[in-house]
Image 1 (cartoon, rainbow, N blue to C red):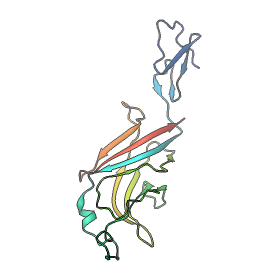
Image 2 (image 1 turned 90 degrees about the horizontal axis):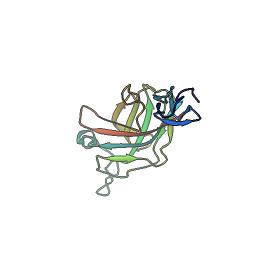
Image 3 (image 1 turned 90 degrees about the vertical axis):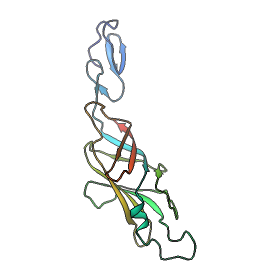
Image 4 (image 1 turned 60 degrees about the vertical axis):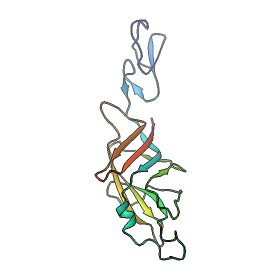
Length: 174
């Protein structure tokens, strides 16, 4: 609790309530009037969406060796997430888009991983699930969750130079 709003009729607690002439800030806010968004301990990613992925990286590859059916050659798409230039996987989706020719994907099943640094770059890779290991198809780099104007948003979106778009849905742990 902070010692502000001495006269609750004159001072408001922007993101909290005034109790007994003291601002009681909502989770994630600090300051005399609860006006400052607090830096979170971690950022949890709950959903990732892709749209308008370019045709070229999908159509210019030989996918699966099995060509016995009309769809056997198509990619079995998964999502992999790495931080910055690390080769270590932070997350691999349990969702599989089997033998698909789609260019839009939503990953939200069992999506629950956290990032502790607010400014770290994430590499989101769409991969073909082939053995012995998945083969990358397309990658998008996402950076900058915090903005001085927007604070820590619940959703960030962007577009890369090929017109592919992404949306990341975020929750903050304080």
